[in-house]
Structure formats: C-alpha cells, structure tokens
Image (cartoon, rainbow, N blue to C red; front, top):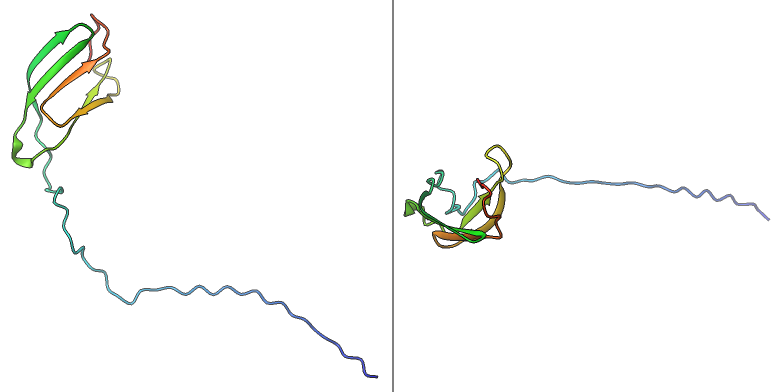
Length: 104
C-alpha cells in the first residue's frame, strides 16, 4: 500500500479593481439658489416691546426671493448668537424673554 501525502495550501487573496474610464464632467444641472450673491442685510422697520416678548418687523430687497428668515439672539454683543426661530414673513415675535434684560 502506498502512502500518499496531501498538501493543503490555503490562499487568501484580495483583488481590488477600480478605476474610471470617463473624464471629469461638469454638473448637468445648475443650482438656482447659488447666485453668487450674498443676501442683503434686512432693515429693521419696527420693534414693539411687550411683556416678556418683542416683535420685530423688517424690510429687505426682495430681488432674491427669500423664502425664510432665521432669527438669532445673544445675551451679549460679543457672545455667540443662537438660532431662536425662523419666519417665512418679514415679522417675528421673540417670546420668553426677561423684562428689563438687554438682548442682541
């Protein structure tokens, strides 16, 4: 009887294939919101102070068709401003304020 030897080899191989045959292309659709212009600064028209609230009304050049305004507030002129609300119209009432306290 003949003895046979078996050799078992285990191979692990990872083949990573990649590549792109196309050249870089410019986007096919333009971003209608990217006009390259910074929106104009709103002009405050009125500030109505009430009990624990203030109502702001402003005007702005409407050539950019702005659809939403974000309202930010700070306790100090030098501190970070935080988002307190947003409005789709040119008025906003900030509620929950402390009477007699100055806000920026």
